Image 1 (tube, rainbow, N blue to C red):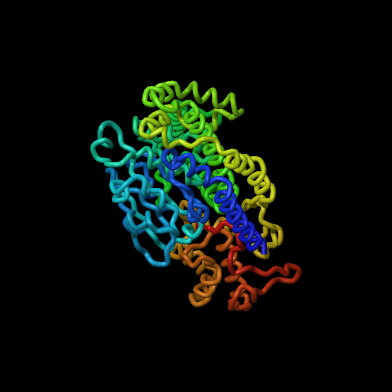
Image 2 (cartoon, rainbow, N blue to C red; image 1 turned 90 degrees about the horizontal axis):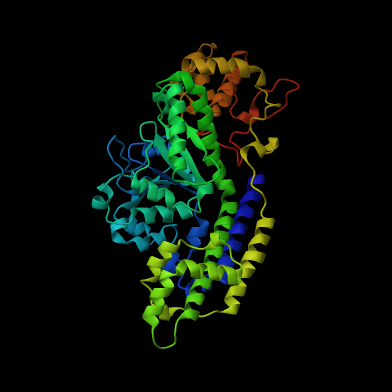
Length: 519
Protein backbone atom coordinates (compact mmCIF):
# COMPACT_ATOMS: atom_id res chain seq x y z
CA UNK A 1 0.00 0.00 0.00
CA UNK A 2 2.84 2.37 0.91
CA UNK A 3 4.55 1.57 -2.39
CA UNK A 4 1.35 2.35 -4.30
CA UNK A 5 1.02 5.71 -2.54
CA UNK A 6 4.61 6.53 -3.41
CA UNK A 7 4.10 5.60 -7.06
CA UNK A 8 0.95 7.76 -7.30
CA UNK A 9 2.73 10.68 -5.65
CA UNK A 10 5.74 10.32 -7.95
CA UNK A 11 3.58 10.33 -11.09
CA UNK A 12 1.69 13.40 -9.84
CA UNK A 13 4.99 15.22 -9.31
CA UNK A 14 6.10 14.37 -12.86
CA UNK A 15 2.82 15.64 -14.31
CA UNK A 16 3.14 18.89 -12.36
CA UNK A 17 6.76 19.38 -13.43
CA UNK A 18 5.90 18.90 -17.10
CA UNK A 19 3.05 21.38 -16.78
CA UNK A 20 5.19 24.02 -15.04
CA UNK A 21 7.95 23.64 -17.61
CA UNK A 22 5.58 23.79 -20.60
CA UNK A 23 3.54 26.72 -19.34
CA UNK A 24 6.11 28.87 -17.52
CA UNK A 25 9.59 28.16 -18.86
CA UNK A 26 9.63 26.77 -22.40
CA UNK A 27 8.51 30.00 -24.08
CA UNK A 28 11.34 31.92 -22.39
CA UNK A 29 13.86 29.36 -23.63
CA UNK A 30 12.63 29.69 -27.21
CA UNK A 31 12.38 33.49 -27.22
CA UNK A 32 15.83 34.06 -25.77
CA UNK A 33 17.70 31.31 -27.72
CA UNK A 34 18.52 29.25 -24.64
CA UNK A 35 19.26 26.17 -26.74
CA UNK A 36 22.13 27.93 -28.57
CA UNK A 37 23.95 28.49 -25.28
CA UNK A 38 22.87 25.84 -22.77
CA UNK A 39 21.24 22.89 -24.52
CA UNK A 40 18.01 21.76 -26.12
CA UNK A 41 14.55 22.06 -24.51
CA UNK A 42 13.48 19.28 -22.19
CA UNK A 43 11.18 16.54 -23.45
CA UNK A 44 8.72 14.29 -21.68
CA UNK A 45 11.31 11.50 -21.71
CA UNK A 46 13.70 13.71 -19.67
CA UNK A 47 11.12 13.94 -16.88
CA UNK A 48 10.08 10.27 -17.08
CA UNK A 49 13.63 8.88 -17.17
CA UNK A 50 14.85 6.53 -14.48
CA UNK A 51 17.58 7.84 -12.17
CA UNK A 52 20.92 7.92 -13.97
CA UNK A 53 24.34 7.07 -12.49
CA UNK A 54 27.36 8.43 -14.38
CA UNK A 55 30.73 6.68 -13.94
CA UNK A 56 33.87 8.72 -14.65
CA UNK A 57 37.52 7.86 -14.20
CA UNK A 58 40.79 7.09 -15.89
CA UNK A 59 41.25 3.90 -17.87
CA UNK A 60 41.65 0.60 -16.00
CA UNK A 61 40.28 1.85 -12.68
CA UNK A 62 37.45 -0.69 -12.87
CA UNK A 63 34.41 1.23 -14.18
CA UNK A 64 33.10 -1.61 -16.34
CA UNK A 65 33.99 -4.22 -13.70
CA UNK A 66 32.13 -2.11 -11.15
CA UNK A 67 28.97 -2.22 -13.29
CA UNK A 68 29.31 -5.99 -13.68
CA UNK A 69 29.74 -6.22 -9.90
CA UNK A 70 26.50 -4.29 -9.32
CA UNK A 71 24.55 -6.29 -11.90
CA UNK A 72 26.06 -9.64 -10.81
CA UNK A 73 26.43 -10.46 -14.50
CA UNK A 74 28.09 -9.14 -17.69
CA UNK A 75 26.16 -6.76 -19.94
CA UNK A 76 26.07 -6.93 -23.76
CA UNK A 77 29.16 -5.61 -25.49
CA UNK A 78 31.26 -5.07 -22.36
CA UNK A 79 35.04 -5.30 -22.60
CA UNK A 80 37.41 -5.40 -19.64
CA UNK A 81 41.19 -5.21 -19.70
CA UNK A 82 44.23 -3.36 -18.32
CA UNK A 83 44.47 -1.26 -21.49
CA UNK A 84 41.85 1.41 -22.46
CA UNK A 85 39.16 -1.03 -23.58
CA UNK A 86 35.99 1.06 -23.25
CA UNK A 87 36.17 3.52 -26.14
CA UNK A 88 32.51 4.52 -26.05
CA UNK A 89 29.71 5.74 -23.85
CA UNK A 90 27.39 2.88 -22.90
CA UNK A 91 23.96 3.39 -21.32
CA UNK A 92 23.32 0.14 -19.45
CA UNK A 93 19.53 -0.21 -19.25
CA UNK A 94 16.85 -2.77 -18.46
CA UNK A 95 15.48 -4.98 -21.20
CA UNK A 96 13.79 -8.39 -21.24
CA UNK A 97 16.15 -9.47 -24.02
CA UNK A 98 19.85 -8.73 -24.35
CA UNK A 99 20.61 -6.29 -27.13
CA UNK A 100 22.69 -3.26 -28.05
CA UNK A 101 21.20 -0.15 -29.66
CA UNK A 102 23.48 2.18 -31.69
CA UNK A 103 23.73 5.80 -30.62
CA UNK A 104 22.18 7.22 -33.79
CA UNK A 105 19.01 5.18 -33.24
CA UNK A 106 19.03 5.94 -29.51
CA UNK A 107 19.23 9.69 -30.07
CA UNK A 108 16.00 9.80 -32.09
CA UNK A 109 13.95 7.58 -29.78
CA UNK A 110 11.43 9.91 -28.08
CA UNK A 111 10.93 7.42 -25.23
CA UNK A 112 14.58 7.60 -24.17
CA UNK A 113 16.26 10.51 -22.35
CA UNK A 114 19.09 10.81 -24.89
CA UNK A 115 17.58 12.94 -27.66
CA UNK A 116 19.78 15.84 -26.53
CA UNK A 117 22.90 13.95 -27.62
CA UNK A 118 22.09 14.93 -31.23
CA UNK A 119 23.89 18.22 -30.61
CA UNK A 120 27.24 16.39 -30.43
CA UNK A 121 26.96 15.04 -33.98
CA UNK A 122 27.72 11.72 -35.64
CA UNK A 123 31.29 11.55 -34.35
CA UNK A 124 29.93 11.16 -30.84
CA UNK A 125 26.87 9.08 -31.72
CA UNK A 126 29.11 6.52 -33.41
CA UNK A 127 30.78 6.11 -30.01
CA UNK A 128 27.53 5.87 -28.04
CA UNK A 129 25.24 2.89 -27.54
CA UNK A 130 22.76 1.34 -25.14
CA UNK A 131 23.22 -2.14 -23.68
CA UNK A 132 20.02 -3.79 -22.49
CA UNK A 133 19.87 -6.76 -20.15
CA UNK A 134 17.46 -8.17 -17.56
CA UNK A 135 19.45 -7.46 -14.37
CA UNK A 136 16.91 -6.52 -11.62
CA UNK A 137 18.89 -3.42 -10.58
CA UNK A 138 18.29 -1.85 -13.98
CA UNK A 139 14.54 -1.77 -13.41
CA UNK A 140 15.19 1.24 -11.19
CA UNK A 141 18.30 3.01 -12.53
CA UNK A 142 20.39 3.56 -15.69
CA UNK A 143 24.18 3.19 -15.50
CA UNK A 144 26.37 5.23 -17.86
CA UNK A 145 29.78 3.69 -18.58
CA UNK A 146 32.28 6.12 -20.11
CA UNK A 147 35.63 5.93 -21.90
CA UNK A 148 38.63 6.13 -19.61
CA UNK A 149 40.06 9.62 -19.20
CA UNK A 150 43.47 9.83 -20.86
CA UNK A 151 46.43 12.16 -20.46
CA UNK A 152 48.76 14.03 -22.79
CA UNK A 153 47.89 14.32 -26.47
CA UNK A 154 46.14 10.94 -26.77
CA UNK A 155 42.62 12.31 -26.38
CA UNK A 156 43.14 15.05 -28.98
CA UNK A 157 44.31 12.55 -31.55
CA UNK A 158 41.76 9.84 -30.88
CA UNK A 159 38.52 11.65 -30.05
CA UNK A 160 36.62 13.41 -32.79
CA UNK A 161 34.06 14.92 -30.37
CA UNK A 162 34.23 17.23 -27.36
CA UNK A 163 34.72 14.74 -24.51
CA UNK A 164 34.37 17.34 -21.75
CA UNK A 165 31.12 18.80 -23.13
CA UNK A 166 29.61 15.33 -23.44
CA UNK A 167 30.55 14.57 -19.81
CA UNK A 168 28.98 17.87 -18.76
CA UNK A 169 25.75 17.01 -20.58
CA UNK A 170 25.46 13.64 -18.86
CA UNK A 171 26.45 15.13 -15.49
CA UNK A 172 23.61 17.63 -15.68
CA UNK A 173 21.10 14.81 -16.14
CA UNK A 174 22.62 12.29 -13.73
CA UNK A 175 21.28 11.67 -10.24
CA UNK A 176 24.68 10.48 -9.02
CA UNK A 177 28.20 10.92 -10.39
CA UNK A 178 30.76 8.31 -9.34
CA UNK A 179 34.43 9.23 -9.76
CA UNK A 180 36.44 6.00 -9.77
CA UNK A 181 40.10 5.78 -8.76
CA UNK A 182 42.36 2.91 -7.86
CA UNK A 183 45.35 2.90 -5.54
CA UNK A 184 47.80 3.18 -8.46
CA UNK A 185 45.99 5.98 -10.36
CA UNK A 186 45.52 8.96 -8.05
CA UNK A 187 46.90 11.66 -10.33
CA UNK A 188 44.51 14.08 -12.06
CA UNK A 189 45.49 14.53 -15.72
CA UNK A 190 44.71 17.67 -17.72
CA UNK A 191 41.68 16.09 -19.36
CA UNK A 192 40.43 14.70 -16.05
CA UNK A 193 40.85 18.14 -14.50
CA UNK A 194 38.71 19.64 -17.27
CA UNK A 195 36.08 16.95 -16.65
CA UNK A 196 36.04 17.65 -12.90
CA UNK A 197 35.76 21.39 -13.50
CA UNK A 198 32.75 20.86 -15.77
CA UNK A 199 30.94 19.25 -12.83
CA UNK A 200 30.57 22.67 -11.20
CA UNK A 201 27.00 23.09 -10.03
CA UNK A 202 26.58 19.32 -9.62
CA UNK A 203 28.89 18.84 -6.63
CA UNK A 204 26.01 17.49 -4.53
CA UNK A 205 25.77 14.48 -6.85
CA UNK A 206 29.47 13.57 -6.77
CA UNK A 207 30.77 10.53 -4.88
CA UNK A 208 34.23 8.96 -5.11
CA UNK A 209 35.05 5.27 -5.24
CA UNK A 210 38.59 4.17 -4.35
CA UNK A 211 38.76 0.75 -5.98
CA UNK A 212 41.18 -2.20 -5.66
CA UNK A 213 41.91 -1.35 -2.02
CA UNK A 214 42.36 -5.02 -1.08
CA UNK A 215 45.72 -5.11 -2.88
CA UNK A 216 47.42 -2.83 -0.32
CA UNK A 217 48.01 -2.92 3.43
CA UNK A 218 46.18 -0.82 6.01
CA UNK A 219 49.11 1.56 6.35
CA UNK A 220 49.33 2.01 2.58
CA UNK A 221 45.56 2.53 2.40
CA UNK A 222 45.76 5.44 4.84
CA UNK A 223 48.45 7.10 2.73
CA UNK A 224 46.58 6.45 -0.53
CA UNK A 225 43.35 7.89 0.90
CA UNK A 226 45.20 11.02 2.04
CA UNK A 227 46.86 11.42 -1.36
CA UNK A 228 43.49 11.09 -3.11
CA UNK A 229 41.87 13.77 -0.95
CA UNK A 230 44.86 16.06 -1.55
CA UNK A 231 44.61 15.59 -5.35
CA UNK A 232 40.85 16.22 -5.39
CA UNK A 233 41.19 19.27 -3.15
CA UNK A 234 43.35 20.91 -5.80
CA UNK A 235 40.56 20.67 -8.39
CA UNK A 236 37.17 20.43 -6.67
CA UNK A 237 37.16 23.47 -4.44
CA UNK A 238 34.24 23.02 -2.06
CA UNK A 239 34.09 23.49 1.71
CA UNK A 240 32.62 19.99 2.07
CA UNK A 241 34.73 16.84 1.89
CA UNK A 242 33.68 14.46 -0.87
CA UNK A 243 32.32 11.09 0.25
CA UNK A 244 34.82 8.39 -0.67
CA UNK A 245 33.84 4.71 -0.67
CA UNK A 246 36.69 2.26 -0.11
CA UNK A 247 36.64 -1.30 -1.37
CA UNK A 248 37.37 -3.78 -4.10
CA UNK A 249 34.37 -3.87 -6.38
CA UNK A 250 34.44 -7.14 -8.24
CA UNK A 251 33.15 -10.59 -7.37
CA UNK A 252 36.42 -12.11 -6.14
CA UNK A 253 37.79 -12.82 -2.65
CA UNK A 254 39.78 -9.99 -1.10
CA UNK A 255 43.53 -10.38 -1.64
CA UNK A 256 44.22 -8.80 1.75
CA UNK A 257 41.72 -9.66 4.48
CA UNK A 258 42.99 -7.08 6.99
CA UNK A 259 40.32 -4.54 6.04
CA UNK A 260 37.56 -6.93 4.95
CA UNK A 261 35.14 -5.64 7.61
CA UNK A 262 35.74 -2.03 6.52
CA UNK A 263 35.26 -2.88 2.84
CA UNK A 264 31.98 -4.68 3.51
CA UNK A 265 30.67 -1.71 5.51
CA UNK A 266 31.71 0.70 2.74
CA UNK A 267 30.10 -1.52 0.11
CA UNK A 268 26.86 -1.57 2.06
CA UNK A 269 26.88 2.24 2.36
CA UNK A 270 27.47 2.62 -1.37
CA UNK A 271 24.69 0.20 -2.28
CA UNK A 272 22.33 1.96 0.16
CA UNK A 273 23.20 5.24 -1.54
CA UNK A 274 22.35 3.76 -4.94
CA UNK A 275 19.14 2.21 -3.59
CA UNK A 276 17.96 5.61 -2.36
CA UNK A 277 18.05 7.11 -5.87
CA UNK A 278 14.64 5.90 -7.11
CA UNK A 279 12.87 7.13 -3.97
CA UNK A 280 14.68 10.48 -4.05
CA UNK A 281 14.18 10.90 -7.78
CA UNK A 282 11.14 13.19 -7.53
CA UNK A 283 12.96 15.58 -5.19
CA UNK A 284 15.97 15.58 -7.50
CA UNK A 285 13.85 16.38 -10.56
CA UNK A 286 12.26 19.34 -8.77
CA UNK A 287 15.72 20.52 -7.69
CA UNK A 288 17.09 20.26 -11.24
CA UNK A 289 14.16 22.22 -12.66
CA UNK A 290 14.70 24.96 -10.05
CA UNK A 291 18.34 25.24 -11.17
CA UNK A 292 17.24 25.38 -14.81
CA UNK A 293 14.69 28.14 -14.14
CA UNK A 294 17.38 30.20 -12.40
CA UNK A 295 19.68 29.78 -15.38
CA UNK A 296 16.89 30.56 -17.89
CA UNK A 297 15.95 33.72 -15.99
CA UNK A 298 19.58 34.90 -15.80
CA UNK A 299 20.08 34.07 -19.49
CA UNK A 300 16.96 36.00 -20.47
CA UNK A 301 18.17 39.07 -18.58
CA UNK A 302 21.58 38.78 -20.30
CA UNK A 303 20.03 38.64 -23.79
CA UNK A 304 17.61 41.52 -23.18
CA UNK A 305 20.39 43.58 -21.59
CA UNK A 306 22.73 43.08 -24.57
CA UNK A 307 19.86 43.83 -26.94
CA UNK A 308 19.18 47.14 -25.17
CA UNK A 309 22.81 48.23 -25.58
CA UNK A 310 22.99 47.62 -29.34
CA UNK A 311 22.76 50.70 -31.63
CA UNK A 312 19.88 51.01 -34.07
CA UNK A 313 21.91 51.63 -37.25
CA UNK A 314 25.69 52.02 -37.22
CA UNK A 315 28.54 50.50 -35.19
CA UNK A 316 26.86 47.19 -34.43
CA UNK A 317 29.99 45.06 -34.93
CA UNK A 318 32.20 47.25 -32.75
CA UNK A 319 29.54 47.47 -30.04
CA UNK A 320 29.13 43.69 -30.07
CA UNK A 321 32.88 43.20 -29.70
CA UNK A 322 33.02 45.69 -26.84
CA UNK A 323 30.09 44.09 -24.99
CA UNK A 324 31.65 40.63 -25.29
CA UNK A 325 35.02 41.91 -24.11
CA UNK A 326 33.45 43.56 -21.02
CA UNK A 327 30.92 40.78 -20.39
CA UNK A 328 32.02 40.31 -16.77
CA UNK A 329 31.15 43.95 -16.06
CA UNK A 330 27.83 43.57 -17.88
CA UNK A 331 27.04 40.61 -15.64
CA UNK A 332 27.67 42.77 -12.56
CA UNK A 333 25.34 45.45 -13.92
CA UNK A 334 22.58 42.91 -14.59
CA UNK A 335 22.96 41.50 -11.09
CA UNK A 336 22.68 44.99 -9.59
CA UNK A 337 19.67 46.02 -11.70
CA UNK A 338 17.61 42.87 -11.11
CA UNK A 339 18.86 41.61 -7.76
CA UNK A 340 20.15 38.30 -9.11
CA UNK A 341 22.67 35.99 -7.47
CA UNK A 342 26.12 35.61 -9.15
CA UNK A 343 25.69 31.83 -8.82
CA UNK A 344 22.80 31.92 -11.31
CA UNK A 345 25.01 33.20 -14.13
CA UNK A 346 26.90 31.04 -16.66
CA UNK A 347 30.66 30.89 -17.01
CA UNK A 348 31.91 34.20 -18.45
CA UNK A 349 34.56 32.71 -20.77
CA UNK A 350 32.19 30.16 -22.26
CA UNK A 351 29.45 32.76 -22.72
CA UNK A 352 31.91 35.05 -24.49
CA UNK A 353 32.88 32.26 -26.90
CA UNK A 354 29.21 31.45 -27.63
CA UNK A 355 28.23 35.10 -28.13
CA UNK A 356 30.87 35.54 -30.83
CA UNK A 357 29.00 33.00 -32.96
CA UNK A 358 25.55 34.61 -32.58
CA UNK A 359 24.00 37.50 -34.47
CA UNK A 360 22.93 40.05 -31.85
CA UNK A 361 20.26 41.21 -34.30
CA UNK A 362 18.26 38.07 -33.46
CA UNK A 363 18.02 39.02 -29.77
CA UNK A 364 14.55 39.88 -28.44
CA UNK A 365 13.58 42.61 -26.03
CA UNK A 366 11.92 42.32 -22.63
CA UNK A 367 8.58 40.52 -22.34
CA UNK A 368 7.01 41.35 -18.99
CA UNK A 369 4.63 38.39 -19.23
CA UNK A 370 7.45 35.90 -19.78
CA UNK A 371 9.45 37.24 -16.85
CA UNK A 372 6.32 37.09 -14.69
CA UNK A 373 5.91 33.44 -15.67
CA UNK A 374 9.52 32.68 -14.71
CA UNK A 375 9.13 34.44 -11.37
CA UNK A 376 5.84 32.64 -10.73
CA UNK A 377 7.57 29.30 -11.36
CA UNK A 378 10.40 30.27 -9.00
CA UNK A 379 8.42 31.80 -6.16
CA UNK A 380 5.07 30.03 -6.46
CA UNK A 381 4.69 26.83 -8.47
CA UNK A 382 7.90 24.98 -7.58
CA UNK A 383 7.94 25.85 -3.84
CA UNK A 384 4.30 24.76 -3.64
CA UNK A 385 5.13 21.51 -5.40
CA UNK A 386 8.07 20.91 -3.08
CA UNK A 387 5.89 21.50 -0.03
CA UNK A 388 3.27 19.06 -1.29
CA UNK A 389 5.87 16.42 -2.08
CA UNK A 390 5.82 13.59 0.43
CA UNK A 391 9.35 13.11 1.77
CA UNK A 392 10.75 9.83 0.44
CA UNK A 393 11.43 7.11 2.95
CA UNK A 394 14.83 5.54 3.33
CA UNK A 395 15.26 1.83 3.82
CA UNK A 396 15.50 2.33 7.60
CA UNK A 397 12.16 4.20 7.69
CA UNK A 398 10.05 1.47 6.11
CA UNK A 399 7.24 0.47 8.47
CA UNK A 400 7.79 -2.87 10.18
CA UNK A 401 4.50 -4.08 8.77
CA UNK A 402 6.08 -3.90 5.30
CA UNK A 403 9.37 -5.54 6.28
CA UNK A 404 9.53 -9.30 5.72
CA UNK A 405 12.19 -9.58 8.43
CA UNK A 406 11.18 -7.38 11.40
CA UNK A 407 13.88 -7.83 14.02
CA UNK A 408 11.76 -7.98 17.15
CA UNK A 409 9.05 -10.31 15.82
CA UNK A 410 11.05 -12.58 13.53
CA UNK A 411 10.19 -16.18 14.30
CA UNK A 412 13.72 -17.29 13.33
CA UNK A 413 15.45 -14.88 15.73
CA UNK A 414 16.49 -17.73 18.03
CA UNK A 415 18.48 -19.28 15.15
CA UNK A 416 20.21 -16.08 14.06
CA UNK A 417 23.43 -16.41 16.09
CA UNK A 418 23.86 -20.04 15.09
CA UNK A 419 23.18 -19.14 11.45
CA UNK A 420 25.79 -16.36 11.54
CA UNK A 421 28.53 -18.79 12.53
CA UNK A 422 27.60 -21.34 9.85
CA UNK A 423 27.10 -18.61 7.25
CA UNK A 424 30.57 -17.13 7.74
CA UNK A 425 32.27 -20.52 7.69
CA UNK A 426 30.58 -21.19 4.33
CA UNK A 427 32.45 -18.16 2.86
CA UNK A 428 29.91 -15.69 1.44
CA UNK A 429 31.07 -13.38 -1.36
CA UNK A 430 31.93 -9.69 -1.03
CA UNK A 431 28.24 -8.74 -1.18
CA UNK A 432 27.43 -11.00 1.75
CA UNK A 433 25.65 -13.59 -0.43
CA UNK A 434 26.12 -17.36 -0.16
CA UNK A 435 26.05 -19.50 -3.29
CA UNK A 436 24.23 -22.82 -3.48
CA UNK A 437 27.49 -24.75 -3.73
CA UNK A 438 28.84 -23.23 -0.53
CA UNK A 439 25.54 -23.52 1.36
CA UNK A 440 24.83 -27.15 0.48
CA UNK A 441 27.19 -29.00 2.84
CA UNK A 442 26.46 -27.02 6.06
CA UNK A 443 22.71 -27.31 5.45
CA UNK A 444 22.98 -31.04 4.71
CA UNK A 445 24.74 -31.53 8.06
CA UNK A 446 21.41 -30.79 9.74
CA UNK A 447 20.34 -34.25 8.66
CA UNK A 448 17.84 -33.32 5.98
CA UNK A 449 17.22 -34.95 2.62
CA UNK A 450 18.24 -33.49 -0.71
CA UNK A 451 14.57 -33.16 -1.73
CA UNK A 452 13.79 -31.13 1.40
CA UNK A 453 16.86 -28.96 0.84
CA UNK A 454 15.82 -28.27 -2.75
CA UNK A 455 12.28 -27.32 -1.68
CA UNK A 456 13.51 -25.07 1.15
CA UNK A 457 15.97 -23.36 -1.17
CA UNK A 458 13.15 -22.52 -3.59
CA UNK A 459 11.20 -20.93 -0.73
CA UNK A 460 14.10 -18.92 0.70
CA UNK A 461 15.78 -17.69 -2.47
CA UNK A 462 13.34 -14.79 -2.90
CA UNK A 463 15.04 -13.32 -5.96
CA UNK A 464 15.73 -16.66 -7.64
CA UNK A 465 19.37 -15.80 -8.26
CA UNK A 466 20.96 -18.89 -6.72
CA UNK A 467 22.22 -17.08 -3.58
CA UNK A 468 21.04 -16.48 0.00
CA UNK A 469 21.81 -13.56 2.27
CA UNK A 470 22.09 -14.05 6.04
CA UNK A 471 18.36 -13.58 6.78
CA UNK A 472 17.34 -16.01 4.04
CA UNK A 473 19.97 -18.51 5.19
CA UNK A 474 18.60 -18.26 8.74
CA UNK A 475 15.09 -18.91 7.43
CA UNK A 476 16.39 -21.95 5.51
CA UNK A 477 18.05 -23.25 8.68
CA UNK A 478 14.78 -22.84 10.59
CA UNK A 479 12.67 -24.60 7.95
CA UNK A 480 15.07 -27.54 7.64
CA UNK A 481 15.14 -28.07 11.42
CA UNK A 482 11.34 -27.91 11.49
CA UNK A 483 11.21 -30.47 8.67
CA UNK A 484 13.61 -32.76 10.49
CA UNK A 485 11.30 -32.71 13.53
CA UNK A 486 8.41 -33.92 11.38
CA UNK A 487 6.73 -30.69 10.34
CA UNK A 488 7.68 -31.22 6.70
CA UNK A 489 8.51 -28.52 4.16
CA UNK A 490 5.56 -26.17 3.54
CA UNK A 491 4.34 -25.46 0.01
CA UNK A 492 4.61 -21.72 0.63
CA UNK A 493 5.81 -19.42 3.39
CA UNK A 494 2.19 -18.62 4.22
CA UNK A 495 1.97 -22.19 5.53
CA UNK A 496 5.09 -22.08 7.68
CA UNK A 497 4.68 -23.87 11.01
CA UNK A 498 4.90 -21.17 13.69
CA UNK A 499 5.62 -22.10 17.30
CA UNK A 500 2.95 -21.05 19.83
CA UNK A 501 3.27 -17.43 20.91
CA UNK A 502 5.14 -16.44 17.75
CA UNK A 503 2.34 -16.05 15.24
CA UNK A 504 4.03 -14.21 12.41
CA UNK A 505 3.81 -14.94 8.69
CA UNK A 506 6.57 -14.43 6.17
CA UNK A 507 6.09 -12.48 2.97
CA UNK A 508 7.36 -14.47 -0.03
CA UNK A 509 8.65 -11.27 -1.71
CA UNK A 510 10.45 -8.23 -0.32
CA UNK A 511 8.04 -5.38 0.35
CA UNK A 512 7.90 -2.33 -1.95
CA UNK A 513 10.76 0.00 -1.11
CA UNK A 514 12.74 -2.63 0.80
CA UNK A 515 16.30 -2.89 -0.59
CA UNK A 516 16.86 -6.25 -2.21
CA UNK A 517 19.93 -8.31 -1.38
CA UNK A 518 21.30 -7.47 -4.82
CA UNK A 519 20.31 -3.81 -4.68
